[in-house]
Length: 207
Image (cartoon, rainbow, N blue to C red):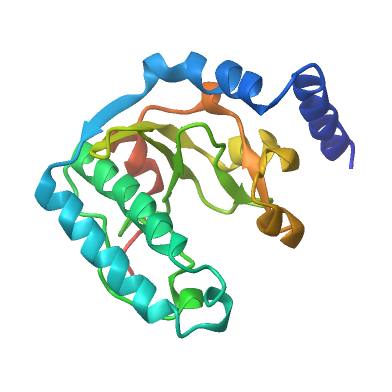
C-alpha cells in the first residue's frame, strides 16, 4: 500500500504544475527526442501495412466491440503496424503478423519469440497502456506529416510502465470512461532498442 501511495504522489507532483498536456508533452516527450531512432518505411512496406490493416478491420467489423469504431479503425491499425514494421526494420527481424482472428486471441506481445509488445502513437499524444502491465513495450511515435517516418523511442519495462502513468493523459473520452487504460509519460526512462536488450525477454522454446 505504501508503494502505491508513493507512486500516486509521484505522479501528482510531476503533473500538478503543468498548464496543459502540450506543456507536459514538450517536457516529457519532445525533450527526449535526441534519443529516438528515426526509421523510414518504403512505399512497398507502407502499401503492405495498409492492405493488412484493411483486411484486419474488415474481419473485426463482425465483432460487436468494433462496430462503433468506424473508419478510424483502419488508421489505428495502420499506426500499430507501422510501429511494428519500424521496430522490425531497425532490428532486422520480421514482426508483423498478417493473420486475422478474434481480438481476444491476439491480446499478446507483438514480437514473435519475445515477451515484448510494440505501442505506437500519433505525435502529440501519450501512449495508452493498461493500468497493470505484465510485459515490456517498445514505444513508437508516428511523424505528424511524413507518413513514412516512425520514431522508435525505446523500451519500457513493466516497472517503468506501471510507475510513469496518469489517467488524465487519455484524450479519448470513451477510452477514459472504460477505466482500463492510462497514459504513459516515462520517456526519459526508456532503454535503447537493440537485440541485446530484446534478448533479455526472449521466450524459451518449449521442449
